[in-house]
Image (tube, rainbow, N blue to C red; front, side, top):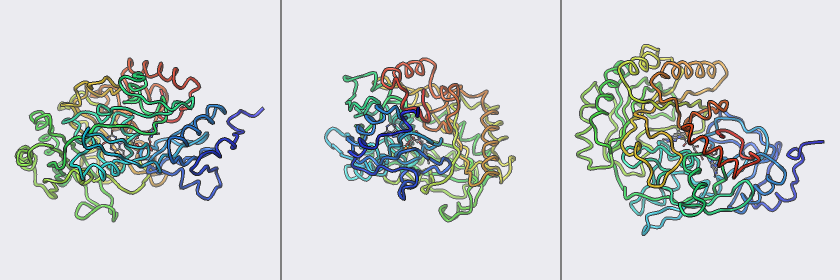
Length: 459
Ligand SMILES: Cc1cc2nc3c(=O)[nH]c(=O)nc-3n(C[C@H](O)[C@H](O)[C@H](O)COP(=O)(O)OP(=O)(O)OC[C@H]3O[C@@H](n4cnc5c(N)ncnc54)[C@H](O)[C@@H]3O)c2cc1C
């Protein structure tokens, strides 16, 4: 007898307002393709949800037919192929409602940070975005949400007031610290393990402007800039947020001159305080080595993307990350050996970065959540672009070498949002402490006993 999920009853799915597509349908490829082109999704059914009702219908049907369910908004986190079951695409659900009195935003499941910023900016308010405002708010927050201004304000998940979520039994639930608090806990840092979020309410900050941007030195100054930056991070106030990167940029039109095609050492900074103070604070970085391209200055919060200059167009990417306890001399030597100029201008990683953690990122959330990276001093992350198999193999090897070499300095854990390709259970569990992982597994057994939400970074 054929398994139930191989004989789906399309009758109930006909209640869905958005498109319901199967392989071979003309719009299917567009519906399933996201930002990260490294993973080709081929689900049996793709649904373009237009609102919470579509998600309820999809999950009721999936529950009745034992069909596994995946969710995608932008595909920034598409690090694994979805090759069966039902994919819910939330990208049409982009409504954002701002309440300037309570300083909150109600954000629909498919909204990107750019949608939120467009709505908050007229009020002089801001949400805690990551390095790319093209990423989805919900996916980012479910994974904790490590913001550009994290040392100043903590994790984006810490600012969530409530979620509306459909659990795998097809029930639409409202959850906040008073209502289903365990579900509320698991959604803030536990990723998409216990339900499909339809909207969330997050606090906003009065942040019209900030001081920030990146200074770039030619690669020959990598070691000097890295050592100066590391020493400097031990002296700066909590509100000073920064990231050191080694960048090997391809000569493509999407990258502006004069950075295009260059091999750079970069420090990107973000400071929400007085601009003159920010300028004075970064003086030691500017003095460390000849600065070839200096893009730091005062800017509107709405221009946050200009700080890290993340790619805006879809590409096939292999990302990876590791939380580090500290950066001692050995750790710096190892990082330089792996990705510094000595590793060659043609090293296959596009970017290898060290983010300064601590500050508000080390303080507990006012309402406990499942974020597990509060004990890290620094955070290493990398991206390689994999256009064709030989390059993909070189990126994979370089990624493994870097993380293997840096392992002695790590906390043993990752951040689920930037973990990259989810491996076996032991690998996926590295995104949480053993206690939080056990609690998430318990919550999943309560809310998703049939393991319908079984794709990607599951517990
Ligand atoms: C260029 C770039 C920069 C980034 N910078 C940062 C950063 O600074 N800080 C940071 O923390 N992360 C960062 N990330 C990682 C990013 O937060 C994750 O990829 C996140 O998953 C993006 O969410 P999405 O909805 O855009 O992605 P999608 O690929 O659409 O979704 C990713 C996953 O999120 C879950 N999900 C999404 N929507 C729902 C929903 N409605 N209900 C339940 N589960 C859902 C699912 O598990 C899904 O597989 C970055 C990623 C990129 C590509």
